[in-house]
Image 1: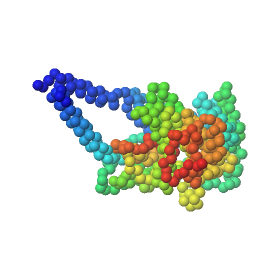
Image 2: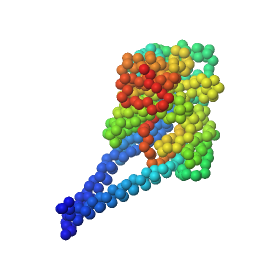
Image 3: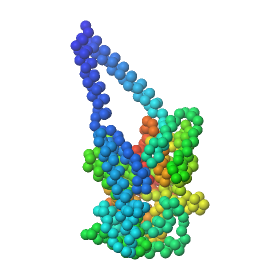
Image 4: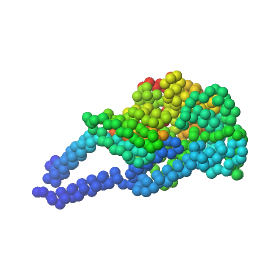
Length: 130
Length: 352
């Protein structure tokens, strides 16, 4: 400690500051990750984009898939869900409500994809086989 | 007192290190995604690579669409549609890849003693589970078609690259194997273009290239076949590197109205001997294999055979390992997968 130069002290202070800034930065990025957006794709093209915010009013979106085919999408602050659809298999409705970034609902007959974008949290898995 | 020179040196060193660290996270690869509807399903490709990765992904999707155009029963000009149309009439010349897939499929038909049978198409069409007018047919209707289900009546000519169905009314359906082949082709194209990390999902058929960019294995959930009851998306996690996993089950496509009325799940995987949806006590099976074409065919074989016969079959053909989930929520796992599959669903128990 005897040979401690003022330059050394400055470096320690600087390093401390960097660490603090980094820590605060990470924290705020993590909370920003809570921001989610519902995106609707029809045959690969984006047709709707709705940000999810707490206390938002529930929205119902009519997705016109052409030739009289449709899906009705319900969006609340708890996520997105297909509540009604013209397709024969009804798989899109059975997929229930999605709320985490990275999750999606697919309606094959109507070529509709509903997905949630946002900072993906620490999901324990990368994908699912089915 | 203040050693300005030394101080400057420290600052410089610090800057160099910071820039170096910043650079590391960006050097080389970025994540690229592409999704398409093809092969009657939804396909998502994720690859890590340089700036040309989108072009490589385009090449992959073009190849997938090409395979669909040759092997779909629904496309009138496909090899398969032409083979079916000319059943009992003339042999049909097909593309090399169609011939290869049919040859591989017939090998599985033979090895499984007909538990797997690509000539199931007349039965598939009769039930139309995945089509516009699904229904439960009369027993007489089913029995009338069963004589047409016989893979030994598919005649291949290796020199002429022709396929012939010997009886009128016969038809083949490559639905239980073509997706696996397409997955292998996607992997081949990506690897040939230098991609070292990728995750492909072709309607639930998964293939991974390498490990994850962070050096850990890919973690793939195995769909909980009773997701609607348990509320869990998956019931197990498999840690995978450079391999493929494919699942078959009674949960994805079945007659919902009939299920609600009678409690019977009429699903889309048929037992060629009965003409009815396979019902041997399994809810689902997943197969891990180096080649997705094997994983795909094996998952159908095992689902139709059931847990005991299915596990024996896997040991016999040595093309892949598997996990079976029976209706009592007992799980059977090949010994080679014991270390990489972890059961996470609380209601599922490992069978002894």
